[in-house]
Image (cartoon, rainbow, N blue to C red):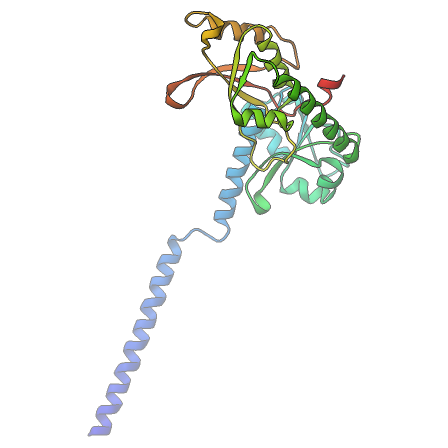
Length: 288
């Protein structure tokens, strides 16, 4: 009788164990049905990187610059308002992207040109979005070769440092400590430096801050945005007269020295004048 009881107990344990295993399996299948398919997260991240890159190129890159990109990215840029005439589509048979000023390196482009992108065709990064295979990198091309581009960048850096040192001696130009450091180091776009000199030749000017570098940009890419104080008692201009005077001076400039200008609010609601130039920064403006 005892052997019979043990046999029955063992059978019950086996039955309930199998039932529990089946229940766990059903629950795993149920939760798996609600789980995103493998790779969906990567696809979403890649799509987000492309949207960010499209928005950045449309807003930041000069619409007079030819941009090379794959067919899908060029279509997205055109839909976002970038001039279709300034887009150069790279197809499977394209042997070189050097007919453009800026190259958008998506996964297809990187697969097509490989290490030649960074080594030969476009060594400087203007901005980068995303990671892994979904990364989108906006690059500055080197029509005369990577060595020539690097030499031009080095010469321009030297010129910006020299011009900046002279500019910082101008008593009409008041700059925040971080701005002074950037100007002295040659980190500021030549067009902005020229703007500071122009404005300070007529009025006292206070440069409050500079814009941030684009994500993933190469170390030597110049800063292209500045924020100026919207008032200055020393200018002796009442009301909005000071802002109107600075904006009129900037609006009278011709390319490539004419920026886009907007009024923005800084910390504490302080009115600032945003002075913005497009990418890429022209080289050789200060030593022509």
